[in-house]
Image 1 (cartoon, rainbow, N blue to C red):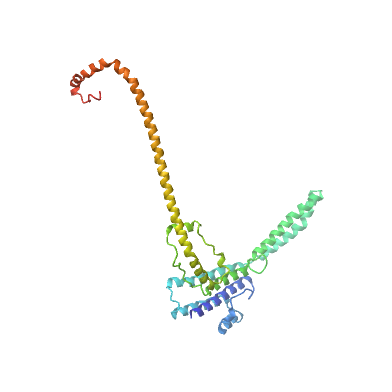
Image 2: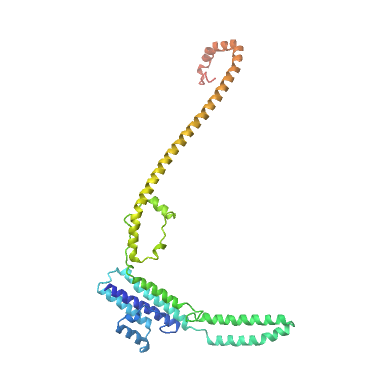
Length: 338
């Protein structure tokens, strides 16, 4: 029952879109539809006679039939859809009808005939009198021809362009591609009839969940091309995926082992680098210590003669230290600092 509803709805919508394009293009049955002859005889008879016999709008008739079809299946319980979502269907149909009426206004509102007649007369006068005026102004034939031709050609070209823009709907070369619009609509409707259009997507059982691997895929390092699937049918995809799973497991194991080996090598290399850095630092410290010891020895050699020369004065100063400590006892500054 669901399949029957979907098949009927797709044919009615395609026929309604084709009727709308016929109305704005001023023709009839010039655009392809999706097998409208498969509809029941009563529907085809009503669609054929609603415009020819009663003068009704065929687009409105088909839209009403679509609404009746949807409402009937709602009452039968087949369309178990929440009302807020289902109301969007009716809103989309009404919005499409409003857009059609706007296009019909452009088609039916033509350029005022008196204005078009006046423009034609003025162009004729301009074409006749411009060469005589140019000849009376200049005596050169080489200047008279282009100066007369260019403005006349430009005014006539603008008038022809305006007449083409006045009616953009039709089957001329400069009109809108209505056949392309109908084909796009049919392609979108045929998508709903495909056997896998209601497929529920999911991930594989062995899909990775590691954030690092997903980030590498996002950077394009592990993006898998789907071009080889284009030549395969949908029935053969399961076999292809099974073969991939069989060949993928040993590759993954080998790749994991190679990662562990490379990680161990990196740890060993890093340890050697740290040991070399420590040895270099110790060598630098020993050199600095040796330089400082040499400087201290030189300072001691220079200080020894001075101490020998002033030995008596130093002993006398050491004897006076207790007296100085008694004098500065009330001062908060320590004697050793002085």
